[in-house]
Length: 391
Image 1 (tube, one colour):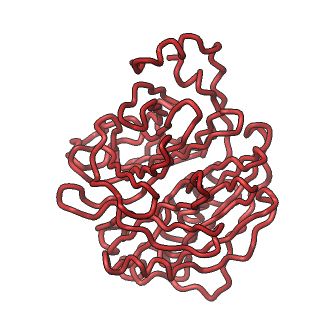
Image 2 (spheres, rainbow, N blue to C red):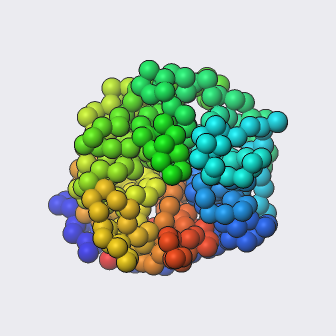
């Protein structure tokens, strides 16, 4: 279903014939001895190289356990990929998060590397933030297009800036990708939680950390999405710069409308607007992504509010199916364009835009288990804007 925004009909009718949608496997369950690859992220460097990354989960599909961060470099538009590498390694010994021990989520001794996020800098640097045990955060960088990486530097202290808002027990970045604004500011969406719930992620709030000196010093931003009765547990958050330079955040949440939460700021650090639900963006309780294309603002997530074999409770989870990309021509006020990338079982996704305008979406694709969706492969979809808007 596509309804064209006023003023854009002629543009779309004049577009060239739509290119074919291409799909390529990037990470597959079982490869390298890992049970699953989850939580996809993808960026395009200044030189046009794709870097895809994910959590490589050794023993199970769960969020806690023996988890590493897998990285691959892609060339030729994502058709050719390097071997899998694991550059995010912190010198030990490493300890489990106390939340992990209390909830007994993972086996003793298993260490969780989680929520990798990259930012491609216009100067060619690739910035990389990741977490360990949902307790510590680290920063590293590459100056050779992702071939080699600097030694991780711990930046956990910046999260102490959020203590006044919450005595957090769990921290995480993104997931997905961060952004560099036109003024050069690096912005990484983050969320913090009280360590409650079955996986320790309950009672969450969302904000950002940011850097104005190329990743050397990071600071805590203001709380964009507090945890309130009307808008409970905002968590995984995506960021994008709007045409007028404002920064928009878009957050997962457990609110009864099952819609995404949105807030904007002039500088992407503080002064966030009052959160609002976006009626056009469904919330099946899943990660989503945003990106800025020369022709439109882009958004991706599973476009579905149905639940197999059970009642769809307000604010409750839905089947992870039908990852779709939507487009807005008015900075997110309306979303007249939508096209499905994967009608079947599909979950987390991350968007990137190449220098030639090509759109990339790395997403989880899989099959249902007895209890929930299980990703089997992380696929990269590649298409242009004409394909997106053609249907």
